[in-house]
Length: 404
Image (cartoon, rainbow, N blue to C red):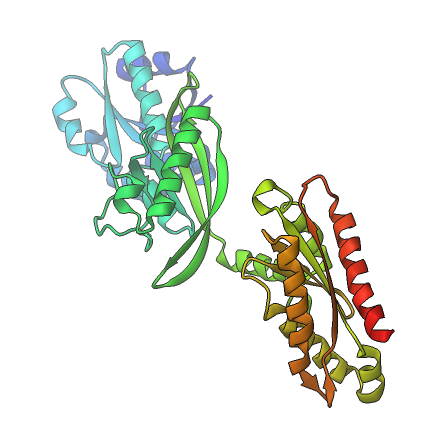
């Protein structure tokens, strides 16, 4: 039961009228003096739901009680005060109505009227006002907003530098009205539509790039539903996750990149080739390349010279690859290029260019030598592993011919 203090009361038909109404509906605490009331409130202020004062206009210390309650109240926890009066006293007691004293009960009102007024007062006092709520949300680093089912802003917790409007309120405007990045605005509105139609929430990441730099924002949207389950709007929170996203990208890049050459590694080769074998990329050419003489350089000049030799091999291969190619260091001095849309004739010409072009690279008086081979897939049913093996075999044939 809600705990209500009935204060300054004394035995009278007026007080009995209210006690009879409240006794079965509330946990009623009766106090007869200002000191007794303040002691009760001091001991269990947060447990009290309302304070009802009997005819305050004839209480000489009433201001002291009001001051006590006012000091204890905050916009989060508020103890509402109501007045019990009679028709003949109402004019005098009216003077006490204020932000603190929010209502009046007049002897003779029906039980239902009195109970509903008290319950509404308690319910209202337990809810921060919309302005108070907005002010609280402004202190959060996140941006929170509410939209209607048409994607129009009903509330936005703070200014956002990705918005182009200078209005104090976004109310009634859509993302296309207020967002600088029109593509992200269209994405936002399309996702709003999906949330409204499906009745299910979603989370996604967007990238914003403006004069203040690049930011990554996580958008979390949930439908607002009425008591019957019908979607009546959208509530969303936007978190700036730039630091975490940049770290994730850095770790991702390190996981797929060879540290020495900066090329993709074997791990990424297995990932990317699974998405390349479709009709749009056929014919698909694989080019294998291997450094000749690396062991000799390592033995004679050390691994620093050997590393330079490997990096020259990277440059010699990259120089001739089409822009949409992928180049991987598969390990040691072994390289593999994947060239979408290149047929066998183009692959043969490219192999020759790479092998001949390598001769212009020199380190520690050694001229770069590359053995190169290729294989071209023309049917997407051909296994990637088989294509790589055949490309390697062609490369080893060149190596053997040179040694022969």
